[in-house]
View 1: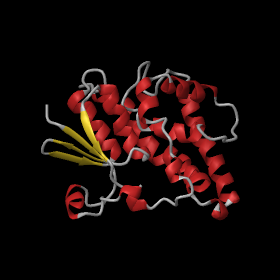
View 2: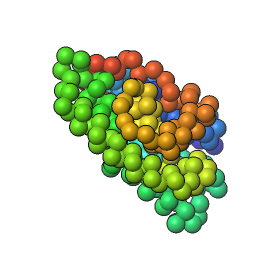
View 3: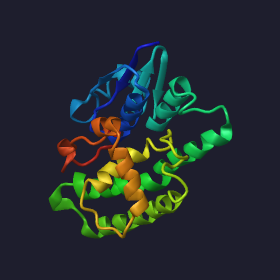
View 4: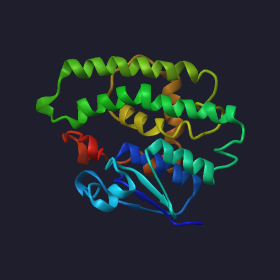
Length: 220
């Protein structure tokens, strides 16, 4: 097996996706701190791997992948069959669509709320914007709440690659005192994640270093 190298700081929610999945797969790898206070993602060598200058990047021998969800899919396809990767396109799609949903629907609200309420310096926080993002976050979470009436995880009764991108987003939501209506299924779903040692070790970690530090898109 080629040596796996994951580039990106551990405090990045996007880096935590492949960190968690690598742990679930039990794959040995090296992680290198890049981005944020560490810098290093604007060097010629790094930009040769990812011209966007963002984290994470995964190296697997001569294969280089950027974009966190693409990395998770690659790991599932290369190392996760049959548990995390099926030859049946329909089965794959049941997880795949929730991965994309986390980017297009849930993430913009939960990450936006985290950035507005935590990463924005306190003196600059916009209460009206925070309230609006809180409401939109609940609206997105209600979609997940209804879906989880069908199964314990988004694509069935076991953890799948579809759950991985949602995990870091839920941690940063539930770790704070966000007022919201009852979300019993989502809260139980989050509790199932929290019960996994791999999740606790890779996702449920301190983000103190980014509190009050405005997000810079290039260094997310």
